[in-house]
Image (cartoon, rainbow, N blue to C red; front, side):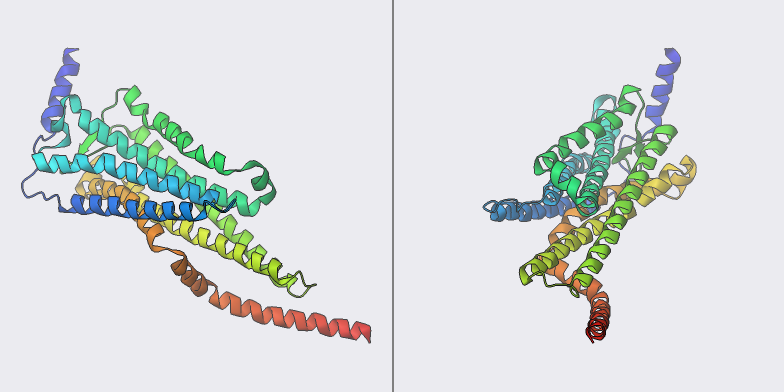
Length: 348
């Protein structure tokens, strides 16, 4: 017992209680303002969509239910984490010194791990929903409903809570990082730190695989629609509905792909940090860079949704599909003319 108390006292003496001179809260204030403002704008746009579509049956898609849950998660994380950093700057004290028994540091580190994992799980749920909707439409129509989408958020929160509570159950201590306004999983918890980073990496790979499958299925749908133009006429209304469906699925894919790429870029420094040696990570300042990148994701996501409104998505779709459309039109005209010439020769 005496050795344990001496070790804890020595660790507390090693951790600074006051912020270094010259530290400015400017970056943290900008991040907090941008995060709250972006999430509120995205939430207002989603509420407007929900109110506008409430009078039409089956108009609110499950994808937008999941997007709403993602925005709520990002907003909640920003409001629960960033004020702690601002309080640290306001009192010029580190997180360890803000509360007794390192409670503020533990709260901050747990919140960071929880909301980062919950965000990635939400992106995986969105990618899985698109994969089932495009790749397995029969199963999707029978089994997947908006009510199941509402159950996704509490399920993800429970799973994230259980996984992120492991350090608390084993009495592991979170580490405080320079300049004293950040706490996260320490390098002494090598097993859990790498397990957490590996889990994020596997989720990113799973999301990319789902997105790739959606792209392949959309290409197949496009080719089937191209071949149907040479066949019997199915009516202008059917073709118009098919084009609208393709456009909506492409818009969803663009939005999800950009969010996924954003999270992958923001998580990459943390993955490198998790597998680096403690001394080298602190020497290269990977710890601070990794934590800042990880927290930036919840700021960028709502702005991606707010900026990529339907007109912008239509512009991106036209730019991405312009060359493909011109090429497919030429191929369609050539194949249709070949089929018509063949049918004429048969008639003769």
